[in-house]
Length: 263
Image 1: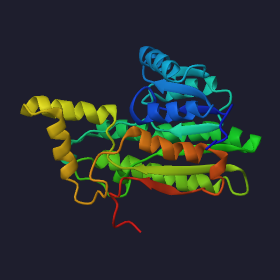
Image 2: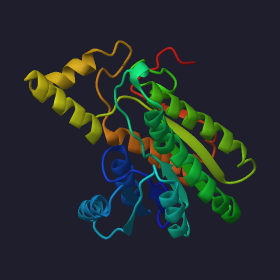
Image 3: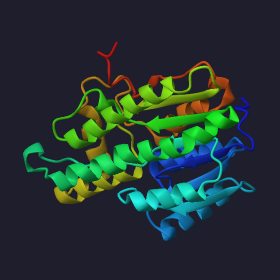
Image 4: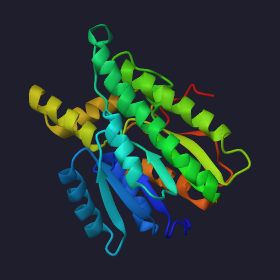
């Protein structure tokens, strides 16, 4: 299926690995001009090389930005002359004790996981509205609906992202610009793989055994396994496409059936 993305300019925050990279690669394969993003120039350049090897002949560039720093985000926006599709993907996550989580940690989660989307959307949405076409896609999480007790800052930030998408969509009424949010389920991204590897080393167990053990602990997952980053990317690609014109203001689940009680 031709998703009609050839020539469209796409910026994906946090796209040097994991879900963000998978989205960037999927959109590049559809002919989009992709701008990658990571915290350091070295990571960005490595991701550009990887993407060029995977999809020869594509138009790809990168901009390094630390989203904890509002000044760096402002500098990033000054470099982005035109973006047709914005994918808010950058985020941090970890397990933590709520009672031992200090204000500095909370601020980091809000800056990176939520305010990154606020600042990028505020900077790029006006241009989309002026040109008469655009897409904003935010990669949130089922954790923003069903907040885990050991990931409360992450869940709160993702809940904010869901609310942000709902509100921004109201600003696009009567236009060909849409704003949608993906509720991703547990995904075997590079970050999750690193956590699984650390657990396997700590417990002296094979990585595969640890992974299957974690997958088996979910009592609601209909898939019964981790999602792959590409499975999130496929939904993002549809939402980025002109073919998704009737989908706006939606929070779409790609969670593997984790939110079985959600209406």
